[in-house]
Every structure is written in structure tokens, then in C-alpha cells.
Length: 282
Image 1 (cartoon, helix red, strand yellow):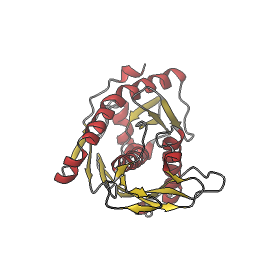
Image 2: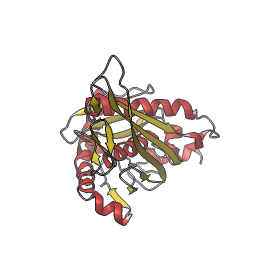
Image 3: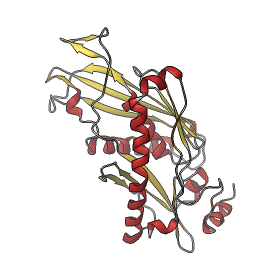
């Protein structure tokens, strides 16, 4: 695709896939067994698979009451893509997810302690990219979060795992959600929400904002690129806060009815986002 077509469409307030500048693509997901936290997420044409597993290990001597939470992102299908370093991008996304989940205390690692100084849970989330159509940071993050929410771990009797008891969810205190904006500099700075792969290829910078339903700003990630004015930044915060409530409600509805969705193998539409007018960021 000629980059000039992408830029020209954005200058005219359009996008090549027919969306408005501040419209997010449809998001659907399919959930597997809760014992593995298996989730297949489709965000537009970007597809991600994630699963979670738990093992009992010895805690770090400096943190005897804290368990481990690790994220592993596999972007190996991008290894033949010109201009992309899959390993570098994987590390950026892993650090981003780690900072959001741990930094916002969405999942407190102390809740993973079994016996102080002796045994703790080590939670590992494996994420694999199946198809890339842009906005990998949001898709990988959301798939990881859904896997953690969906996952059920066994209970402990004494010092041993008791597989006869009901598996229980992780202790997740709130649901931070991330929204990425692409910054494209031409005659002025144009901003698009949820960039496609074509927009990723012409961007001058990007900004990811993580918020929760309580209007907390959980994390802001801007890895260099073109600057952004304070007034515009404040407007983008308002956009993310307007999106987080309906999205969170949909996720909570799934969690409430998780058993039914898992048994029927029904594909869940997480949210079909309404259009947001560009003047809402002013």
C-alpha cells in the first residue's frame, strides 16, 4: 500500500478501512478452558492467542511474601517483515504490560503467596501473534489481561495442590484498559485511534493511555516521536475515559457468565465501539 494514500485519506478525515479517525475496530474473542486461561482475541484483522499457567516455586529471598507474574510475547511471525525487529518490539510490549498490571496494582503479587519464604505461585502468561494488522500493543495487552481474568488456579491443601477442589480465579482488583493513538505529522499533526498496520507504517509517534472505570490514569506510554500539545493530550485523556466504562461493563458481563460462554464455545463480541467526533478532543 502506498503510504501517500494512507496520509491523504487521514488528511481528509477518513481511513482506508472506512473508519472515522477516532473509531476503534470491532473486537471479538473466543475462550477456552479456564484452567489454562486460553483466549483467542481478534481486534480488526489482528489476531492474538494467550494462555496462562501457574506453578509453585520458592520466592525471592528479598521478597518472601511475593509471587511471580511474567509475560512472554512471541512476535516471531514478524521476523521477515522489513523494518521490524520482533525481539525489540516483544520486549517493549512485555515491559508495558508488566508496568500496567503490577504498577497499577491490578494484580498484587503478594496475593500469590502460599507460605511466606517457602512457596509462592508463579503465574506465566504466554502470548502469540497469529496475524498482524496493526496496534500490537493494545491487542497483546488486552489478550493478556483477558487470559488473567479467565484463568482459574487450583487450591492448596496443606502444602500440596488439591485438584478435587474447585479452581479459583486470581485476585484482580480492577481492570485497566489501554488505548493507543497514532501521531502522524504532515502539514500538521493528525491523530488516529487504534492504528491499522498502514497507519503504523507512516506514524511519526504514538501515545498509549491506560485508564480504568474509576477514572484513574494507570499508565502513559509514549516512546519518543513527535511532541503533543498539552491541550490535545488532555482531550485524548477524555476520549479514553469515555471508552473505558462501556468496555469494562462488557468484560464484567462476560466474567459473570463465563461458564456459559466457555461451555458453548461462543465467540464474544467485547464491544462494537461508537464513533467519536474529532472535536471531542479539543
